[in-house]
Picture 1 (spheres, rainbow, N blue to C red):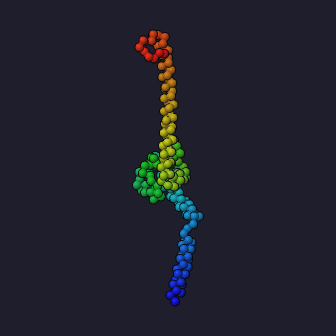
Picture 2: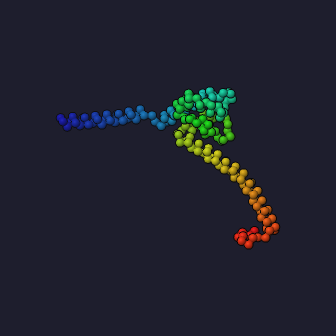
Picture 3: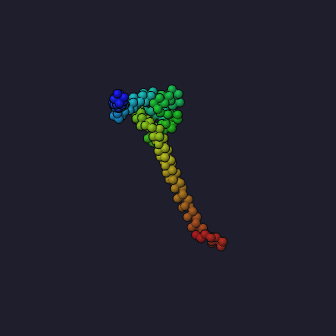
Length: 182
């Protein structure tokens, strides 16, 4: 009798475990459902961002200008709306520069702005990388401008030195203690 009772108890536990495990698998959302939920969330967030962007657009042009965004980013309510969407806009100027495609882009279409913010929000490091890429582009552009500016000046100085050297070569004899002969 003990053997039959123990055997029935063990079998019932195994069957209950299988039933509960299958029920839990059915309750968990699968990958397709998670992707669909994320897309719906992104669509809701994009609508919310567009609504916020329209409220920022003071001139009604359909674009967000840098000064409009920087001014709005000083409003704590605006910052909290972005924070609720998982977006940190502590520095409005830097945030706008990260969303702009170049340093010269002073305004962004509202739809493009919302799309760029959603893309950058994928994870925090993505926004950091966008910022670093932007800073790198700025640095490279400044370095290129510096190189062009100083290259012209160096060519001018080289030409002047050459003319002075050639004039010095014919006007005065070289000094006896000079180690450099032209």
